Length: 633
Image (cartoon, rainbow, N blue to C red):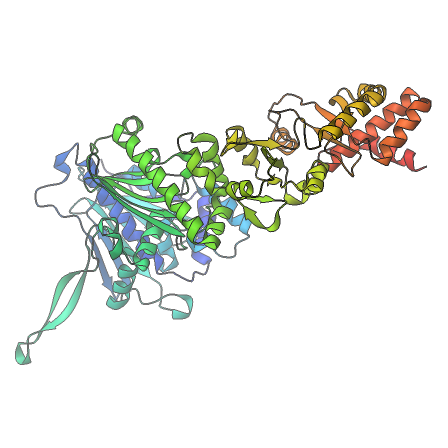
């Protein structure tokens, strides 16, 4: 089929992103070469994988390779591979459209950061790695021929909002990219990318671990005297040994950092690496990394998770989600399993016994390494927990098998120390002798919960209370009934028994004495509360609202309602402090004879105060304001 030359326009978002990339300043423009070599390596991986079912794609004697050809006279740099190649439609889809699934998220991120330049760490994360070459080139010509096909496709871009596509020729399958380089400008990071020594330095720095030879023809003088002559020989620039196949003692930190950046599309160094080699029933090697910072889209449904999966040195999956649980989606790296069938499918993986066993082992290994980090480097672990603590809490909720191992990793704020986080283990070591439960209180922030009236009796009696301020905390605790034999108890829910037998008896007597007032107050606000009763938890505030065991916390309920989620109306108990002057005077006025309207006003005022104390919205703000104004007259 003959393909006529076509001029095509970029999509609007693609054009916008191109403008940002071309016109922005980069501190590391040399990264373009890493991205193009990485793409070429992926193309060779795909060819090997495709040849599993169609051996004709790789002829006898075939050697996968990536070639670099600099031309200093014409200011061009050519990157060529003999990988899988692309059809006409694939060129349009993969090159003519940037990051079909990620452009929108990327643009939102840039807008949020109000970036004047595209952050280097975003290169590659959304499939824009190919376009990084526009940092250094005025024009790009790509020629690609799909393995098994006879014709090639040429894609050309020279700036502006359109590109050209036409039929072309190429002797073998694969892809060739010719860059017309911009003039060198060291002050702008534009080195002479046709220089042999600069190319060697960049390849060694970024792509030494690429498993295919990166070849550069180099010119050297040979012989002596009249026999001296210039010859050009191919030189392989990279070692090609997969870093995860080295012993851990031979892995250099610089190598590890660069390999992480390659597999994670991240520009910062990892916080921690975890190397593991398993032998026995199942043989595999893995090299995993904990990022230094949480990806901005870690909680997005479109977040791409999983390890790169190899089998018998063939890359069979770019992101294998099944080898780690979802809550460990922040872990990056490579798994090379020796005995997986090469034609294994996504569905088969989910039910593969070997993958299930590997998943269990890797999960336990990561938890063990995080525990070591917590025990040996407190500051580094605090940084980890700041970035990824919420997803570890997801694991407590969802991973029953490893829940007991995850619990020591948890950290919380508490009444014990304003600056330092505490673990459940440390909390338990400080519990009073008579204390049978681990107390906690949920809220939007420390500022909100530490001023909650629910804390008053606990503070007075010296009981420590944990602050659950992550939205995930309430869901986590629903799957965490106890820790080391101690039940977790929300001090904002259910009854609290802190006093002595004498104090409890005194409260029961007062409850009888106040019963008429309590019933009268409950009636006008029965839409919002179950009942009104006296409190054992209040010492200085007049009132508070208390939920039942199993109820959502107020701030989780607010979040769900703001998200338009349908949840049943939760009525709570309003507790009054019989020792507070407001309540004492209200009791005296009620005994002297208050009208129903006055009782209703008092009930609304108490309800409003209780809601405000926990930062909950008022059901009728205008009505509450009128009552306050009336009270002040």
